[in-house]
Length: 166
Image 1 (spheres, rainbow, N blue to C red):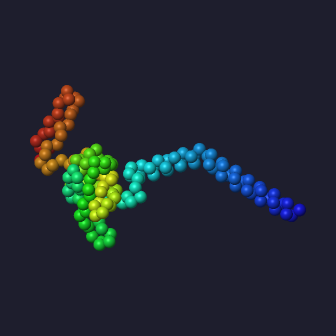
Image 2 (cartoon, one colour):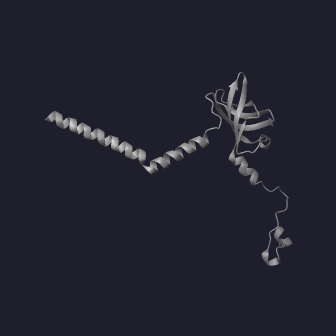
Image 3 (spheres, rainbow, N blue to C red):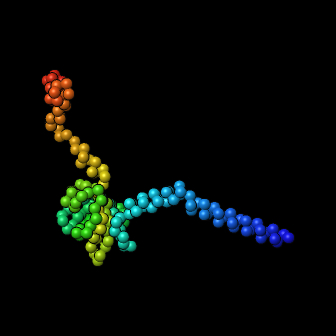
């Protein structure tokens, strides 16, 4: 009799665990959360899939149609070094429309492969802060401030009294 009770108890526990797993798998909240997690992971990963893909980031020193030099931190030597990356026609870009829109001083991240002694860039991403900085270019010293339109004056710029500019 005791043996029968233990077998029944074990069967009930196994059935309960199976039911919970099925309920969790069919839970729409978990399904949506899993979809969002997968979408974020796919967006963060580079579009190029290669087991030998490596990552670095740094500041562009110079760039030409076929080569880019960036100043990056070398953890082995505990110092910054200028490293050259070859650019090919199939390089993928992130946050920048064209390679020609990357300039010296821009912060970039690079996914690359190594072939022989060459580092070949596969994906280049321009730092979003650089993009924001370009959109908010500062006013040069001595440059006139943009005129303020006054709707009460027919849209003509408002005159600023000479005393107010001193």
